[in-house]
Image 1 (tube, rainbow, N blue to C red):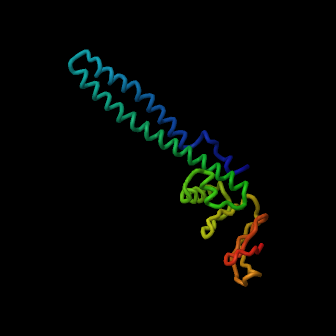
Image 2 (cartoon, rainbow, N blue to C red):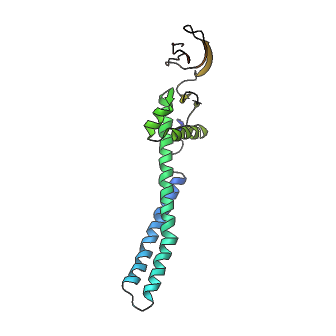
Length: 179
């Protein structure tokens, strides 16, 4: 089974936050309507002030938590979706530059790096992050990803290169193809 298929999108803390946010919003609406109605058409002289208190109470007790829970739930769902997409990218490509990941996910490069590390930590991605070159080398496509030292035939320098199947490696000094 693919690692991204472990948790369906309808489960998890973000769904719980979304459901609770909707419940609080549903509770907030009638309470606010009662408070507004008491202010708009008071039956007795003190009803307008009581309506204002009821309106403020409903907004503080139900409205603010509803807005926070909905915002956190949407943010968590977006994060989960990005991790799943990143997992699919890692399974499909042996070499993923952080710039490409950032462009595919629609996030800044620094957030792409954080997402890669988070996905590796959660077991959704297998591989290693080459910080020097800004590339994620996926181990999900093949088990033959390795780093070796090679001497360049063109300039004679010794370069540490990452060797992956179907990917060319070049000398870090002159750019000559090594493997």
